[in-house]
Every structure is written in C-alpha cells, then in structure tokens.
Image (cartoon, rainbow over all chains, first blue to last red; front, side, top):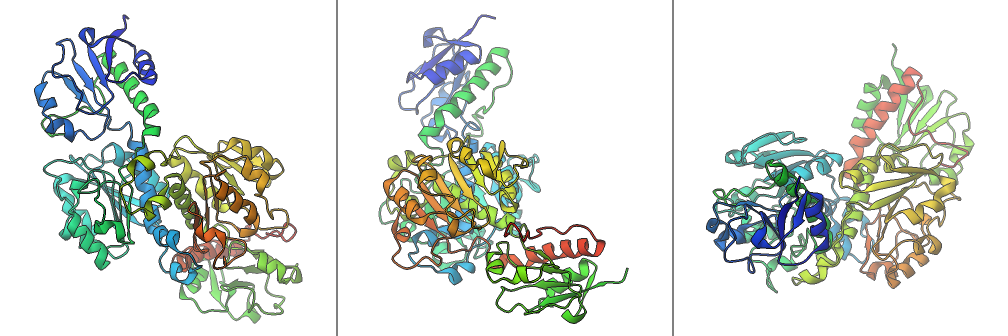
Amino acid sequence: MTPVPVALGPHADPALEDAIVRGGGHCAPIEEARALIWNAGPDRFPATLPESVRWVQLFSAGVEEWFSAGIIARHPEVEWTSAAGAFAATVAEHSLALLLAGVRSLPDQITATTWRQQEFFGRVGTLRGARVGILGAGGIGRALVPMLTAVGASVVAVNRSGTPVPGAEVTLPADRTGEMWDRIDHVVIAAPATEDTRHLVGATELDKLGPRSWVINVARGSLVDTDALVTALRDGTIGGAGLDVTDPEPLPEGHPLWSLPNAIITPHCSNPPAVRPQAYADHVATNVTRFVAGEPLVARIDAGAGY
Amino acid sequence: MTPVPVALGPHADPALEDAIVRGGGHCAPIEEARALIWNAGPDRFPATLPESVRWVQLFSAGVEEWFSAGIIARHPEVEWTSAAGAFAATVAEHSLALLLAGVRSLPDQITATTWRQQEFFGRVGTLRGARVGILGAGGIGRALVPMLTAVGASVVAVNRSGTPVPGAEVTLPADRTGEMWDRIDHVVIAAPATEDTRHLVGATELDKLGPRSWVINVARGSLVDTDALVTALRDGTIGGAGLDVTDPEPLPEGHPLWSLPNAIITPHCSNPPAVRPQAYADHVATNVTRFVAGEPLVARIDAGAGY
C-alpha cells in the first residue's frame, strides 16, 4: 500500500511525524496532502485548504473556538476530528483528584498548621458507597467511570442519547438530566460547551445537592452559573467545588472563588502540556490508520451539534 | 445450630449486636462467652479473661499498643484478630487521595489566589504510566492496587512473603525491599509498625526517589525517619509527602512539616469515625460466621511477628 500523504502543521513535531508513519501515512506538504494534522489553535489555521485535503485533525478536545471562528462552517466538505478521547484519561484523573480532595477535606487540612484531628474526624468523608453523577459521559466521563467504581462509588451517567455507559449504574439521556440531581451525592461536569449546555448547573440544580456534595467541573466554565455557585459555596448548601475551568476564565484577581475555602481552582491544567504529546500522538496514529483503511475516524466533530 | 455466646464490650453498640446475630452468635455476658468483640483500646481491657473465651476481636487494624501493653502475651491460649482489612478500603482511598493531590500539585493550587496557569502547566503530573511502590501490601495495599491500576499506574508491591498480590506488576518479599526503590516513581507506606519496620524509609531510601516523587504514609509514623524526610522535602530531592501519620504524633505545633509547602498532613483521619461502624460491623459478622463454623478467622494477629 502506498503511504498516504499527510500534512503536519504549523509546528514540526517528531512524535507526530512518527505517528503519521505508524498509521500508514507519510509526511507531505499541504498542497499534496489528503489530510492535515494541526497542532495549534485556530489563529494560524490556513484561510483556504487545498481540495485534496479531506480530513483535518485538531489538537484540542473542546473545539468551540473553531466553531466561533467560522472555520468549520467554511469547510463543509472536510471531515473534522478533535482530540476528544486522547486526553480523556488524564482529565478524568484530574477530576478524580479534585473529587477525592474535596470529599476527603484536603483543602482545610492542607492549610491547617496544627493537629486538628477531632475537627477533621467529622469532615473527612468517603466516595465508597457514594453516587456520582457524570454530566456529559463522553470520552472523559467514560474514562472516569472505572476510576470511580474502583474506589467504591457508583455512577449515574448522562449523555446525549442515553446509550448505556459501561460501568455506570444508570445512564440517562440529556433530556432527562433533571432526574439525575435527586439521585446523586456529587457531580462531575464533563459535557461540551454549547448554547444548550450554558448554565446547565445553576441555583435550581445546586439546591438539589447536599452540604457534603462536591461539584467538579473539568469541561468549560460556561456550563456553571458562577454567581449561583458562589452563593451555594458561601452558604454551605453544597460541600465544595473543584474547578479546572471557570467563567470568566482566566478567573480575575479578587474574584470571590479565590478566597472561598471550599473552592479548589486549578487553572485549566487538567491536561498539562507535558503529558499531551504522547497521548495526542497515539490518537493521531489511530486516526491515520483508520483514514488509510477507509474506516470511520474517532472523535469526529458534528458540525450541526457544535462539538 | 444453637447460637454461640459472644460478649461485646466495653461499649453497647446495636450495629455490633446485629453483626453478632448475623454471624450466628448471640450476645452474652463475658462469663458465659466463647468470644469477645472489643470496641475500644487496650486501657479498659479486663485484667483476666474467663477460660471460656477462645477468641478476641480487636477494634483497630494496627495493634502495637496491645503488644506493648503486654495483653496479647498474657493470653497465649486465645486467638486474637484485628480489624485489619475492615478499614482497608477507606484507608486505601485516603492514600489515593493524598497521592493524586500530590502528583496533581493540588496543595500549591489550593493556596494560590491568582491564575498561575503557566506555572502549574509545568507542575501538574499524572499517575498514568507511573510506577507506585506499596510497602506492606496487606489489606490496605491490596485494596489500593485496583484503585491505582484504574488510573493507569502500575504497582510494585512488597509484603512479608512475596506472595504475588493480585493486580501488582511485581511483588517482592520484605527481605528484597531494597530492590523496590530503584523501580518506582512514588511510594505508599502501608506496612505494620514493628521493630523491623522502624525507619524503614530513611535518607538512603529517599535518595533513590526523584524530585517529582511523592511519599504517602497511611501506616504509622515510626516507619519514616522524620528528620530525613524533612531534609528531602526542604531540598526538593523528592516532590512531596502526604502523611496521615507522623512521628512524633500528634505532630507538635511549630514542627517544620506544618510549614513545608510540599507536605500534606492529615491528622490520622484516613479512617474517620463516621465511616467505621458499618465497616467494623461487617468485619465482625464475617468473623463470627467463621468462628461459629470453625473456619479460620480473618485478620488473625501473629503473636510472634508482632502484628
């Protein structure tokens, strides 16, 4: 089989060149290429693509910037894939770290400077036997399920179609998200940012959680109504929040979330650059293999759905 | 089958009475009992036991206080069992919480009050692909293995006999502990406190770890040479330490561990009282069932080994 010409840009990257070759392609200039592996954001994306390019692989799991820049709409004849799934496991791990830190009351213990055992005896909880809702059980959510069940939690998953998520106790379709809130102790938000998911978690939803419930967001800040969250954190109607993403983002200096003791902010670093190259290269190799074989690509972007 | 008379003391506890009945026993005064379920420490333990008592079930996983008080040596004809295993899963969960918090650089992020993304990009790590040593793979260690493998870490286990631990990549016998240190990225200490394990982790061992390695101790403070640990934390020759137990314990005010930013201290609360009763009751029911049936009890104390 002749290797399929695949372009890589805008940055040179030996691991991705290797991934293209592993997948049965060879690195070619974009004028000759049938596919483009793009390893940056939308700013430097070419204004036009040669007709030969039938597939573009993007570098991030969330692609709303690409939609708002109009780039995807401009190329309806091209198949677009995101990096969804490539970084799923590391983001899932981050959400587990935040949830465990919250449930185990680590923020207060990390800042303590004396042996406050009696106090923490009453505050350290467990995920064992807890029910965790995963709002948006795509790649990240699916990677998170076995991590949660390994510590003895059960999972109520919500995804678009309601297709059962392996390992979840219950999977609900997105139009029945409301039923999730009464069933869960904690929630991990991992849904894409779209117009439909803006403020999916607001005062009404937070009110259904309890004073030991943690809300983890590793998706996008816009899914949570920040003002409602701040109120719930201040009033103690929920236990706390672990936020890798915020609205606004970056979170400005002096924002109340910085000083609430039951909020953990990690500055959008659930998928840190140092761990990305190998995960992305593996994802690219998988998709080049599928492209060469004429099989369906993974992490295809649905231009209509917006993710 | 006539229910076997089992005494419960010193505290009344409906959950334990239920567990005794579930196991095929009935609650009886100690004078008539064939077994004693003890739900407190050694201070109030009876000076003598009636000859009818053949088995004593203790309330904690670590029993060195019972050895140092001479109580176990005083009753060589009695079978002693600890609560080892009963609380294994919750302690394992705590150790995972500490390790993930460390690897994901949560202490620095929890105390940050501005969006320091670039800095944390370089500091947030992952357990995926990491090798974690479990020093003392008894009940806690065995419960921890599937939690670690679920996040993509592999395990190098050490136990007394070297009997392979399910899910571990390698299991080493205790006399080959030295070989573990060169193979691992992080270590979780879960071994019993005995004369042999005092300062099992000192300067020599810490030197074999790297600047991103975390040391988690959920066993007993005496296993770690605290001065050597403080030096390693100060010099950054290891990444950090997550300590549920310390030496001395309680950790006194002003101790350097309280102010080191890469030390997480949780004041011996990995197994908080609120989660204990159900776990202990289940353990008691299991052992009463086995006692009634004449089967080997779980968590038998080895009077010779000292745990």
